Length: 486
Image (tube, rainbow, N blue to C red; front, side, top):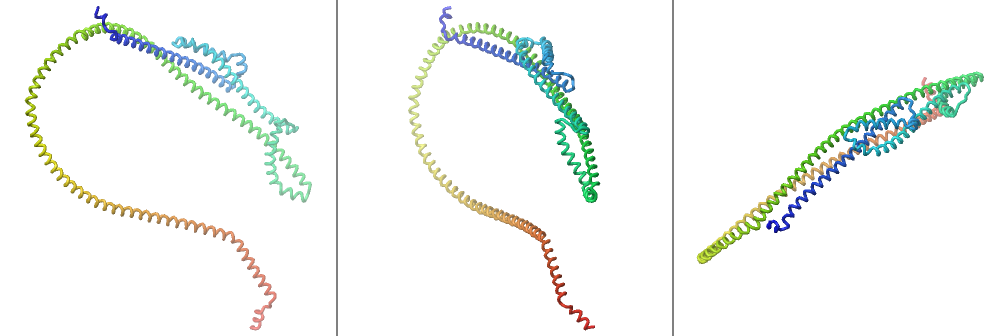
């Protein structure tokens, strides 16, 4: 007991520090695990919010499909009555009740208030947007139908009473400009030559043709208006069918994308639930392991205390006594060895001096011989070096001459090739210039050819006129000569 009380303080502090460090590490690990659990809970909350958004998007797509298919759904009335909002909330409540049996129900109970406020605001904004889009689509359809009905009514009233609305005046200006240009071009080309001849001969025929032309123009104008109204209806139906097809395709694609996302999110949710269960199991295992570790640490601390007592006895009792006995034996052995060394020193000093004298004589003779051999070796190396340098100079001269010839020859070859290439290029340029100059000259001569021909014709005409005048002025000597000969 006295020995344990008189032990030094620093030694036991090491074991205490180690135990404290282990406890701190355990606490740090426990805090890290808690942080991981909090992060996983946050992720689960985000997943729930994303699922709610997906359900809302599904409801919106179903509303769009109903609107596009022609179901009588008034989004304004649904917004006022709150029916759509209640449907979406009922669906979300069903989904939440279905998932309440899962381990995520604890997290949902914490995030219900936030999710409801977010869904309410989001649903109201979406309903307003759909109401505006529905109103705009209805107004567009109404304007198109009104324009078609107004144009049809205008064509009928134009035949009878020639009255119309503002839309009729706009379409009249467009259709008159087109129909008049077409009918005028057709009728003028056909009847232009006839009317001129008849107007000169008889005015009654011209009035008849003008009245007939007017009636024909009026009939063509009315037929063109009817054809255009039919084409507008056909184009309108085609446009509406195309828009419906495009909207249906877009909605189908959106449905597929949303279904795929929902499937992926469900799979991820299942995987995360499994991971949470595995983590809980691992936490339980870790707690059991930690308890076992604490028990093992207590046992190890008790063993360490026992070992420390034995260690102190060994250090402060047995080992110093052994060191003291070893020192005594060492001093005795050193004294005996010192006596032996002193005797050996006296004997060996004489022998050492004699040996040094012999070694000095032998080293002097060896140094002289080594110097002679070095001088001989240096002379031989100098001769060999000189011969080697001469051989290298010869090789260098030969290499320089061959390299110079090679460089000169390559330069000459390159220069000759460049000159030939340049001469070819110059010949090609000269040939191109010659051909272009020939073409230009021929074109110029071809341009001047009619003038030259005209001048030659004029010259021939002048010669013929002069010959005629001379023949008229001068008598015909050849006729008198012929008569004399006869």
